[in-house]
Image 1 (cartoon, one colour):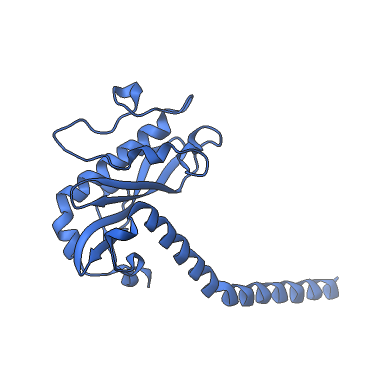
Image 2 (cartoon, helix red, strand yellow):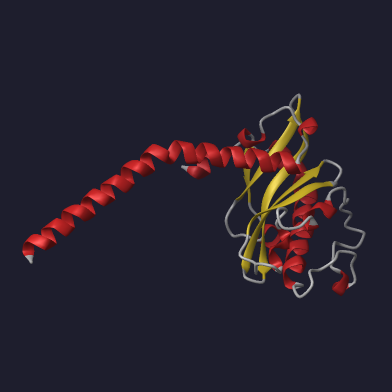
Length: 207
């Protein structure tokens, strides 16, 4: 019995060591893939002709739990041409999804025009709420070009008197999604000057 226990313990240690070695060997690759994926998504919400700087390297952290939906600082990326800011991409949280938080990436230019929206992460119901994913539906594409104006009605689903289609059988998800977009656009309008001037600080956050 003791002998079997010893063998199992040695086997467990070897497996743990092997997992640790593989994890260390793939860490750089995983990080590189994550950066490539982020670069791709940023290009989808901030057109390449609107910046000549690498967005992933011009990252700042922003904090506003009420408008950004998270108690934690959220990353934002400043687009510039010849050093002059042209647009922002920022990650926000829609906290009132059907199954919890929905993480969204939005791009907005200096004239309050919404350049694009993409869903980064969610746990919405497959076949209903997951239409917020571009690979499942083109629903998120309809927001590009919308101009935020605090004197005009915000984005709303038709059920709430707006113009945006809700999903059949799933209103909570698009309602939460639109709420997050409205809040994020309001946040950018209120803080644009400070955001454009903010020093790069995401690396310090990752340490």
